[in-house]
Image (cartoon, rainbow, N blue to C red; front, side):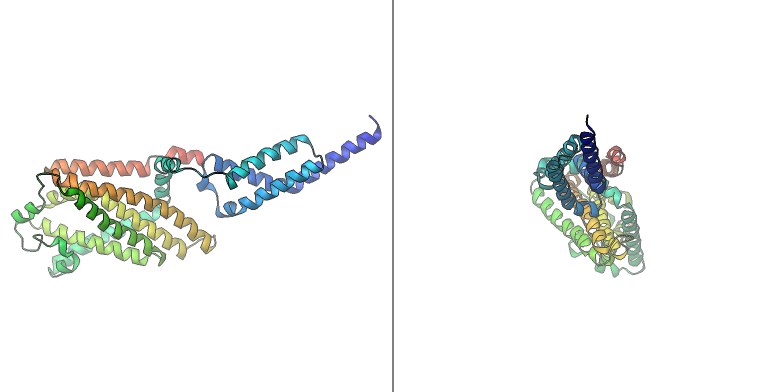
Length: 342
């Protein structure tokens, strides 16, 4: 080989090395983002990476064009071609269908979103417990508070001074399921409005959300005081548990989602306010999608199971089983996938 040919090869290698060194950081970052998207680890992507993806793709495509024109080494060109194809699919390729989204949502997406807001769940839980205790204490000191705390549709026969027999009858069952489907729709609408309101008002730094949780649970505390006064604590708890273990859990998550958004606005941490709020909003929206499903289940349980199952221990069994199911699903299911993503 002549010295001239050797010099030409050496110059080409030098150009290739300089070309790669000047752009390789962007290529590697693009490859890392694409790999995470391909393996479904979207939650590991920062907002900065998501926003940078289109620009990094265009940079890689431009680099590929330059590499081809300047006859850089074949290995670099082949690698860039593969990277650009994969990145194009993620930027411009078809989005996943509903079935695939639902499988990912129920298969771990929802449970991971719930676990991600666990501090807000603890805050909401503490507020709900405080609300129930406050409702009990207020009515215990002055029965007139009962009329302020308990909605009118609950004060048919369930009022202070009602006998044990009357209150026990209010916890009774229906002889058939006829007409209960309409009742289920009403219950879903009522509970959904409370949950959505608790979530939607989270933007005001979570303060209205806390007040809603306090008010709703104060109602429960007042009614618990009423039934406990006639020695019906267990019966009332069983009656409530059939749907309450699902319904109250859903309201807890809705409140926690609202608090999560408000807390992210008030304390964005090291991130800018808008990216922090946007990330919290997406996470909270995922939780709220699960809340809607839970409220559907709660309405069915309240309209059918609670009205058709009359034995106290049978009701407790249903309520306890539902509570264990939700706890296992939200806080145990999908943890292995989360560890793999990490």
